[in-house]
Length: 89
Image (cartoon, rainbow, N blue to C red; front, top):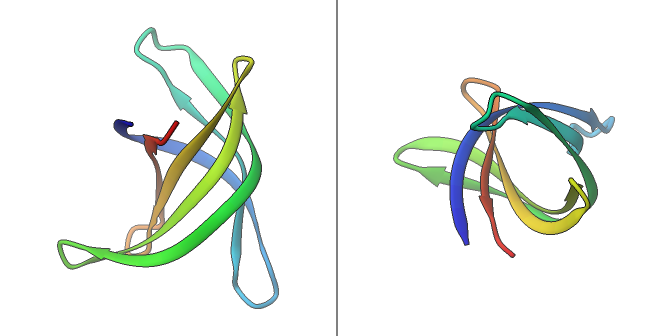
């Protein structure tokens, strides 16, 4: 499991009930290249609290650069910012 916590630019959809679904995101790697990652499936999502801050955590199957991985994305409610938190597989 690799902890990353990288800020990302995310494209998603919201339902009429307010449920969020991430569709794809991109981030800058160490070589300053832009990596685009497609979300294939959202396995689960849950609301969490870390150090007094509210987050929504998404566990997703994602594909990038020819690899499929289980990842965790986090949405910080107070700042409306997304992060690629960690790779689970």
